[in-house]
Image (tube, rainbow, N blue to C red; front, side):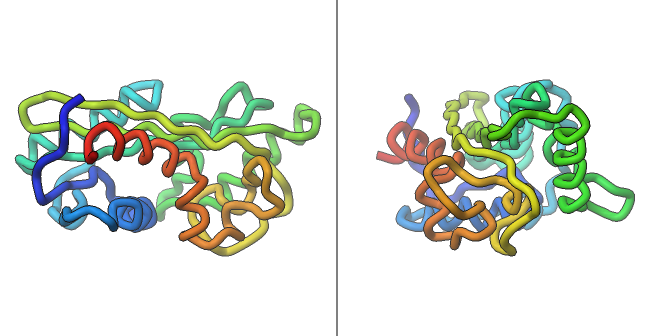
Length: 202
């Protein structure tokens, strides 16, 4: 396992919400966190059909373009009743000609569950894959998961993405009703980050 020894890290994302979460999770370390968006780097095409493959594409593209160690996160919600969809296409379900509309994506998710009369509880998992890539081509991979259920109607205005319809196991609130400092202790991303920190930062 290769240790992170630099003082700058580029996060391979153009998603402000994801960047904010990662900055918070790395808050205790002496590392300046920037993003591909802040560096003006283009987003590569995500051509794989799995989280690890897409995270690797993003991490290695950012590391090569910036000359810095890069961290990529590919994550999404996998709904059991929909055969694991939207999965790697979580963000694609929200795409519109004028940007991402996650309300539309959540409505589609529920509509498709209703169409097949999916049984309750409508179980799902948020999954997160982190890939840390070095400019020399080396990488390390870490995976995290948060099991829960899809609920309706949407609840809460915190968080981002599909958070308003995801109720994590053992909790009465959706991710969108849980403050960021609490969510960052239990989320799929937190699970993956604990493994990343243990492997590369300590």
